[in-house]
Length: 333
Ligand code: AQP
Image 1 (cartoon, protein in one colour):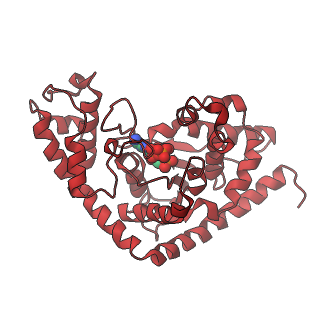
Image 2 (cartoon, helix red, strand yellow; image 1 turned 90 degrees about the vertical axis):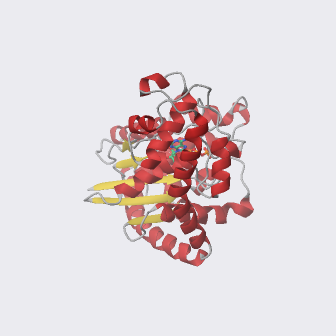
Image 3 (spheres, rainbow, N blue to C red; image 1 turned 180 degrees about the vertical axis):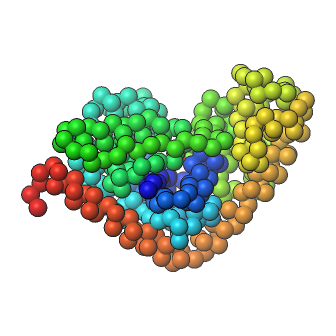
């Protein structure tokens, strides 16, 4: 039996990187035999950065709506909100006693997000990967579908699972396996092929959001950074052209063809010809998701019913696991 867990933060609108790197894979995993899927909106993580408290609740619903609009079926998967399951934070504290500061200091996401101001970064941002480990281990999840950027955090979760088992002489936590598959595990910014597409990047022109309308998608693609050379015959010839490779990767992922097949469609063409075709494809694939999201957001009560059902299921798994952890650690009960 596979138990699949993953989540996204309600920091902003989801973008094409979130969709192609993670969410699209979540949808296909729902139909795997003998698997149980838990998809969480990670609001406790979202407050580790500056955020708008007046927007958090709506932003949380929007992410749940995006999951469902992209194809997560609440009858097959549990969709819920992290802060509704107190066991995540409770397990985090227990795991924090075993997490080494040195390992946390090496986390690239912390370094990127804290920037030059590490001394002034919040403890929550520093301990983010410990909470992420708790998010996964509180369900004894066996598989975690994520984008490539989360690989290092997953390794820490595996490390903490092993540390717990060794320290208490038990075989309690399984080793969660990262599932980093799909045609676009690392989608890059539209403006800089060396940076990942990110919700928190300052410029909205760097990403395509699932809520962007057709005109905005076309505008962002038109203004995407490229180079002056035509598209070559083989993928190998895109070496050293990160923006071109990113756009071909995105086209291929949306069209559900290989990168080479995508390239073959445009051999010898300039970006002026490629970009309108890519924009049409992006609109065709994303607009049904946007429309469904908008319908769902018009009926927030419907989303809340789905979340309440998911919460019930998630807590029924998490509570006994936390209780077992407390017993293993010797707490008075
Ligand atoms: N550019 C990307 N390419 C592929 N996958 C990506 N993911 C994020 N960016 C890309 C995957 O989407 C999921 C969302 O995780 P998150 O909400 O925790 O956000 P994140 O990984 O920190 O990255 P974001 O979306 O850019 O948010 P901000 O800017 O707020 O940090 C994860 O599975 C992630 O791998």
